[in-house]
Every structure is written in structure tokens, then in C-alpha cells.
Image 1 (cartoon, one colour):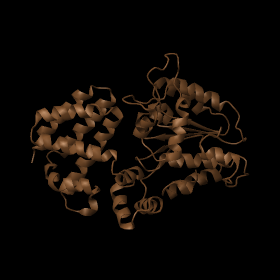
Image 2 (cartoon, one colour):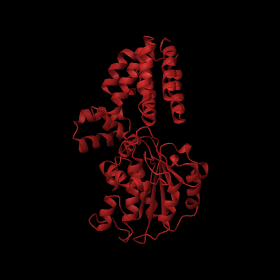
Image 3 (cartoon, rainbow, N blue to C red):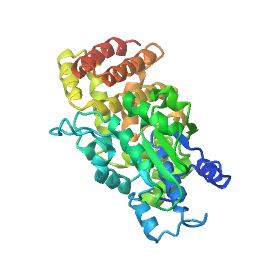
Image 4 (cartoon, rainbow, N blue to C red):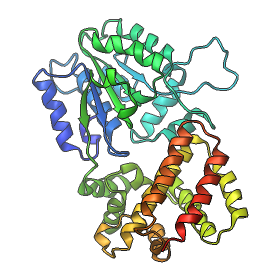
Amino acid sequence: MKFDEVIGQEEAKERLVQMHENGRVPHAMMFCGPRGCGKMALALAFASYLIGRNDKGGKNSCGTCRQCAMLRSWSHPDLIFTYPVIKPQGTSADHKMVSDDFAREWRTMLNEDPYFTMNRWLEKMGAGNQQAMIYVAESEAVIRKLSMKSSQGGYKVNIIWLPERMREDCANKMLKIIEEPPLQTVFIMVSEEPERLLETIRSRVQRIDIKKIDTPSLEKALTERRAIDKDVAHRIARVADGDWIKALETLDAGNENKEFLDLFMSLMRQAYARNVKDLKTWSETVAALGRERQRSMLVYFQHLVRENFIYNFRNPDLVYMTTEEENFATRFAKFINEANVIAIDDIFGTAIRDIGQNANPKMVFYDVAMKIIVEIIKR
């Protein structure tokens, strides 16, 4: 993958190239930033940039040799991937899960699109309700792979996607090799929630914050990659607010956010009507989604609450909603006001925490529904 395949992020690209040209590539770095900004795409491009120069005397990779072909298929021996996995039902208790158990699914996903979410990865693995983790056996696999010499005598790169999902025993074992890596080894962590990572690891990596994609770059990508009309691309880019994944979801008529919007509208309507029976049915429906999708839904709910509150100011430049979301807001926004906006946001935030701590989802969402009844009538 090349840098010009990454949408926007010109400042970050230039910074990474300068690191290499100045001979100051950190042995461990962590890319952080909002969803859909291209953290993983940048990590893939930088890894390809480093490894592609191993046998080119510092020149750009040719794009046609065997080494470049392996990089394009994400099968280069000097590029190591670490990512959360599940333990499928029926797996032997003696089998220690590692990333390589899902290598085929991982490479397929990267080849489809380097901009992806945890939900998409869970679907690729057929996870159902399982949560993905990086298990302790992964640290042993990484240490073994990095102990081997580079196939081309240059950099070896370990991309760790979502290092915050490492179990504590895995993180502690990874700490030693991160502190004292083999020569010309580079760790690139791509994190969504860096605060969840062990402080001992965070203190040993160079953090690079990736900004949202600028709106002109999103518009350009939509028109060039998706053949979208310029005016439509402009509206989608504004709504996406720097998130390429959200821009694509907006284009997809059957996207997940439309399902979440329906659930949000149902919750608010039934809460306003104080229809406890239907709210119980709603909570049971949501409880069946699986924990990762539940968390995504709740984050989306928080987004809608904030947007509906802002909608009341009647300033179109401040509103970032799709046409469907805005149509609902014309009637609903008046119910989100100074008296309840913070409390409603906190209700969903607490539910995110509880779901992450494996609380009973039926109880969590029924509690959410009952609390929304109280808040939605505050005018």
C-alpha cells in the first residue's frame, strides 16, 4: 500500500517520511485518532514504505517485483500482524489462540478495504456474541517471529491493531521486547482507546495523533473512488465529519447506522408514550445484537443526542446529520434541551461501561429505557 492510497492526512504522511529520511524512525509508535481517520491505512502504508526500501537502496519500491507483490497481498515475511481474535466454539482447550489462526480472513479484509471497524472484523471471524482479545500466546508468537532475521536485511515491522485488547499477561510479556527490540524492528500500534493500554507500554511508545480527514479530501475520495456527484459528495463529507467509514455507511442503503437510527427512534417514541411493554420488547431486541454492536449503537445514540441538541440552534453549518436523521430531528430535537441533554448522554455512557464489563444486556437496556422515560419529558 502506498501513501497516495491513504485519504488526506498529508501532514502525517510527510512526518512519517521525514522520520525515515532523517534516520529517526522510533522503534515503537502508536497511531491514535478518531474512527475512520485512516490510522490503520497510514500504518499499512508506512510499513510498506519501510519494508519496500529494504532492497532498493533507499529508493521507492518498484511495485512489480516479488517483494512488492507480497506486500500488496499482506504476506511479506517481514511484516507481522497482531490483532484481536476469538476462540471459536469447539476449539480444543489445549489450543492457544493467536492472530495466525485467522490470517486468511485478516488478509481478505485488508485487501477489501484498509478502512474497517471491529464489527466488520467480528463478522469476518463469525464471532457472534464473542468479544475479541489478544491472548498471551500471541506475545510468544511475536517474540519468535522477531527473533528471525529479516528476509531482506532491513526493517521488520509488527503492526498491532487495537493493543488495548491485549490481556494483561500478554501485555506484560510484550513489554520486554518493546523495551529491547531486535535491531531494525519497528512496532506500530493502532489504537482506538489508548487510555486502556498499560501505562508501562504507553510510556515506551511515541504517540502520533492522527486528525480527522479534512472535508475536501473526503469529497475528492467520494467523487474519484465512488463516482459520486460533487454536490452529493459535499453533503456526505460534511455529515461524515472526517470519518471515511461513516461516509461509506451513508452511501450504503442497508448500513448499520440506519438500523441504529430505527432503534433510537423507537426508543424515544415509546419512552415519550411511556409504553413500558413495548420498551421491554425493545430492550430484548437490542440485547440480542451482541456486545460489540451494542457498544457501537450506544456511541451512535450519543452522537444523535448531541446533534439533536445542536439542531435547536437553527444553524445549518453546525449540524452534521444525514437526511434521514435530520427528518427525525425536525420533530424530535425540541425534546433534547438544557434540562436533559447531559443526563441522557450519561445514561448511554454508563450503558457503554456496563456492557464492556459484561453486565446482563437485558437488564442494562431495560434500565436505559426506564431512565429515558424520566428524562424525555423534561421540557
